[in-house]
Image (cartoon, rainbow, N blue to C red; front, top):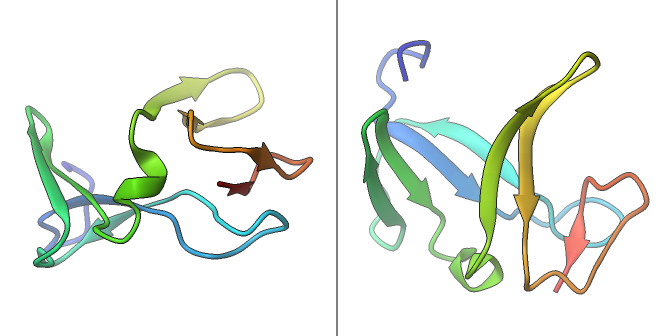
Length: 92
């Protein structure tokens, strides 16, 4: 959150419809709290889960990975029944 744009209240995880398999993970800064989002208070700030995405994400874990070639979030989702070849989207 120390690098967040001005006016950001937290970070939000959602699963918009896109990609070969239908759903993708999206992590973005948010400037306002939505009524149906799940809010999780962390030492680094507020983390939100999109209310429409909660059922797709139950039991999931999210981590940050860095190596010599890339850096980004990784997801382990027990609800995913398949994924596209490049790993950018999933289906439930």
